[in-house]
Length: 121
Ligand SMILES: [Zn+2]
Ligand SMILES: [Zn+2]
Image 1 (cartoon, protein in one colour):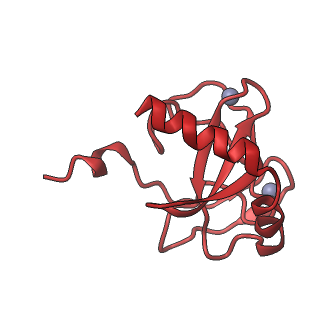
Image 2 (tube, rainbow, N blue to C red):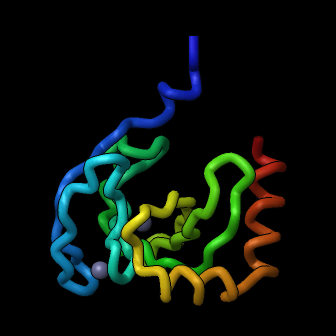
C-alpha cells in the first residue's frame, strides 16, 4: 500500500488570482494550486496539501525556487499574513521568467529551509 499518496489531496480547479486578477483555467494534468502568472497562492491548506482546512486565507507570496530531489523544481511560498512557508510544485504553464528570477533569488535561505525540513523529518 502506498501511504504517501494519502498525504496529498488532488485538487485541480480554475480560480481568479486574488493578487493579480489572472483568470487561471483548470490545469487538467496536474494540480492548479497557484497563479500561473504571479505564482501567488492562498493559505488555504493546513497540514497536508489540498486539505483546505486553514482559516488563515492569507496570500502566499513566492520568495524563491529550488530543485527538490523528489518533486523537481518547487516554489517556496511564504504567507504574508501568518508567515508560514510551503513548497509548491511548478506547473508547465507557469510564468517562466518569474521562475528563473526566483531560482536566483536567495540560495542561502533555500539551504536553510531544506536543512530545517530534514531536521523535522
Ligand atoms: Zn496572480
Ligand atoms: Zn497564513
